[in-house]
Image (cartoon, rainbow, N blue to C red; front, side, top):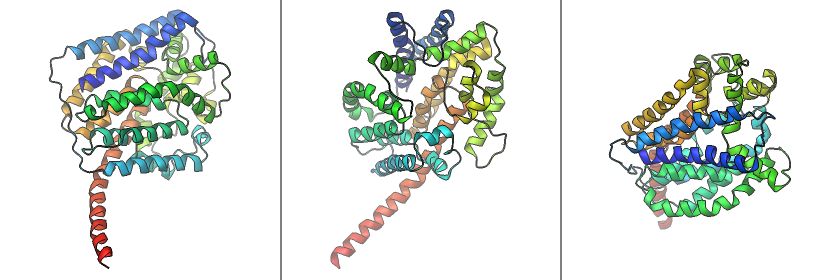
Length: 395
């Protein structure tokens, strides 16, 4: 488990901080969210993100603990059936309900299918299929299905998401079976990642990406955490108005949104997730516009904590990581719980707000609860079919 967390932290740091830094040094900064470039805030973002992550890696690396690999505990292949069913159902629903435009307009929120999909999280199912199910699965087929589903749904992180599969697998005993196959997929998959990025971008209705430099700027801007972290730090260092940030990112406000997200009905005042207000907080859009037009823009956990608690953000970030590891270690004998937490860990650091993190964690646990009910039902159904077959052959 320790290896998995360290790998995810280093991956986050290299891909989302160091690589964009190198690109900016050679080709300059071409912002994709606004026209503002403030170098002091950009450097501050690099340091605020890098220092606590590197400290966390150092502490975890030298924490004396036995590296336990988690053993699989699900017999047969019931998860295969559930995984492919969930992926196909999500794609069919996505296209028959209007595609990405429906997501942008928010029309899918609160629908019955949206609620059902809380119990069928494809990423959680993919991890369970590979690492918790005892019987060997066709890893390449499962991954291709998942990447196709993610890309066709308009997400630009199809190939990138498989890196998380690889890193999360480091915590599991079954990973030794699939390591080479996943690595081989990533080696060749990274070559087609830019084309999948372009396709997913066009499917969002954003328009044509003309020219290699434009495409490259878009890709780097998409993976970078620096521009979206620079803007809040610029506001903070220049004493600009952050009242909307404190209102929408207030702990109690996020708690209310989390409760409304996981329970049927509306208990509190209706509102969108805090990260939707990023454009209003730091880019000059009106509150009414961002509430009606979906666009999720996030800044990292260290930057969020800095806006809340100044430089205490550094020890607080380290504390979050270490506590997270201790929680995983506590549940090391329950692979499904470890899957739920590990699949949400990256979002805790990168795509940060408490509502998003909680709803993803909640969906993972609902999927696990559904699996617990599905497996015995699947076995009973299988036994019934096996008993009927001999009867049909004799008749």
